[in-house]
Image (tube, rainbow over all chains, first blue to last red; front, side, top):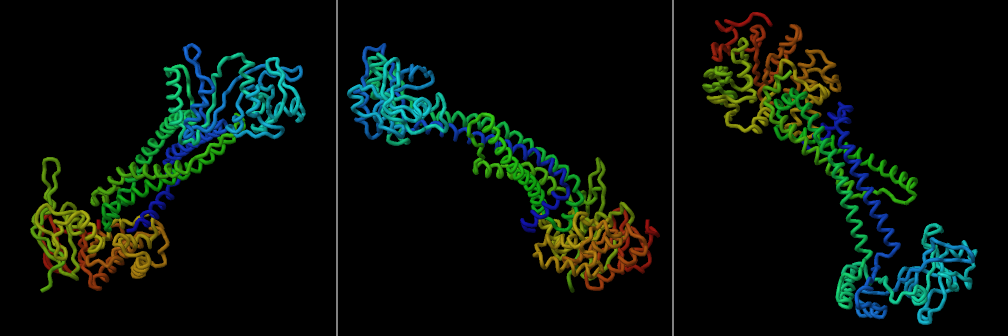
Length: 397
Length: 242
């Protein structure tokens, strides 16, 4: 008897008792669907996090110097030197100087971010200028009181015509020389486009700080992010004679760390959901044992007519595996439906565009696992059926 | 001289029931030639069911030998026993033992399926066998849509489909009225005339006399082995179908 015929026979037996088969499958259906949704949720979260990080630049490394208490300090010239000496790893660098207290006309803007940056910053962040010009080397050199503002400020406060107008930061006036192309999806207060960029030299003087304590550095390639971070740390440790007075954070590293956290969480949740698969498997085993007892006479007849143990074993294992795999397929369909529903729900409730995406790998695995559960839990009842003594089985009423 | 098809050589079968040993078959010897029609007769507990199980390769003897077509069945593995049942024997049971979920035609196909006959040929041979028992027009029905006599004819068709040399009928008329019983017995005689070896197991003398040769068992021993019309052939038998 061929495998195909065993399969056809299994389908017949399954069809003959639809309700029972459906109830048997239920554990597998729920298990597969929930594992799929959870893994899909994990994928969605990872994609969301990755996207958020990419908008910040996964090729960037943030450096914060806290060297005030130590006797030594590191100047921006030294920072630039480190970057230039290791051009294999580093691409560009910009100091960051944060200020606050923006005023346009008489209105105070408390959510607007004000940052002093170098002329390379826009390039590093892949920002572009829509009107006027970006910040230039001479602005740094001459500590000019100029600024580039975001689209939000330009639209809201200057009606899109901001060039040459004045923005006040900390009481000092700055002339708008450029407007940045819109970065965020929407223009909103406190968003990516509610910002003012000044030359870092001007900002440093305005802030009254002697040394600049934060930098952003871009690496030549994301693959080198880890080594680049080490190179930077080594160089700073040498300058300071200590490794505790600065911090170097690579975005790639943070992304990896967050993704691995999500991974751990999802794995734990999926494992809990997978318990349902085991329960489903036991359900299949239970029903198959009942089925073997019910069909004792059938087994006896088949054996009398020449069925070998292997044939009977195969018949029951295939039946269990088919039941389980069919449950798996229904579970996959249900998982898809639930994932779509979850995507809609998350999008409307949380107002973030996070898609619950079950991966092809998780679907293949779900199907494989469900079939394997059928084989695993169907084996014991099938073995029992195969080993029935034909005389006893024929006599069974 | 041609070798006999079935040989029981000092065959014994003992069962352990608690402390007691039941001697279900106690030193039985006989042989059945190719093309014979033999009835094995005995009351319940005489050992005829044990003989039937052993001839049918469903059971193996405790001691002695059972040779089927020259092969010692006692030394066969479970797989070889299954293969022997499939190739050498056609079973006809008292309770028909058709598979209720399969159609009549599919029931007849079962032994052919286990023999590995390809689908098309299987269908053709099963239809041929159904034609012979006059039930070809019922091939799509389920067994429970048929009368007892028809079901038994289906099981005869199933026994014949694989073209085995031995037909083993265990109380084939036990569940039938006398008219259909005669039909079924007539069919067995027909099968015998076509050259097959038929072994009929029964407790009923009136059925047993269908066969030219009778082997009578009592308490696990052969008490008569000879022609159906011989003296003592019917001694100790039950007179009517019970």
